[in-house]
Image (tube, rainbow, N blue to C red; front, side, top):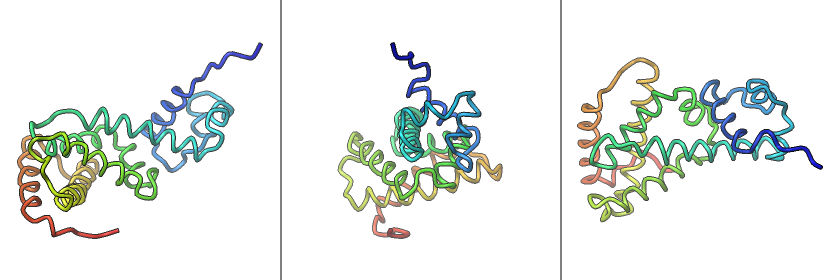
Length: 190
């Protein structure tokens, strides 16, 4: 009879997530993850074939936690303002994970940006306030708030600034109103 699987795929995804959240991306190897969690590398390679597959699976797991759980926390009645504040709070609570995803490149090749844009479009489609926004407005809102949110998240993590929810709500209401009126001003293209 085959040996019972003791370490599940879900456990391996949680180990990868915890590793990124604690240590970042720099040494994200099967050997280092296994060592930190007291297992061998065999369960990782048995479940995911190679390290690239494991990284992709961990990234999907992280995306679920980030986008479906943490970024859905409500900070404002305005869903785009709430999302911006939730992102900053997520980065403050998970600085190593933030660095791994947005600075060190764990989510390579625009994967994080594209996933974020799709999430943004879903939020807008479900919002009575924004559902009539044009594609130009949506893309302008996303890229321009993305830049501001990431700058504020980085300055908060670095200890340069702290921001109250009230301040952030006021700031993002102002920014979103301006962007909706001026969607043609887009900082860069890919």
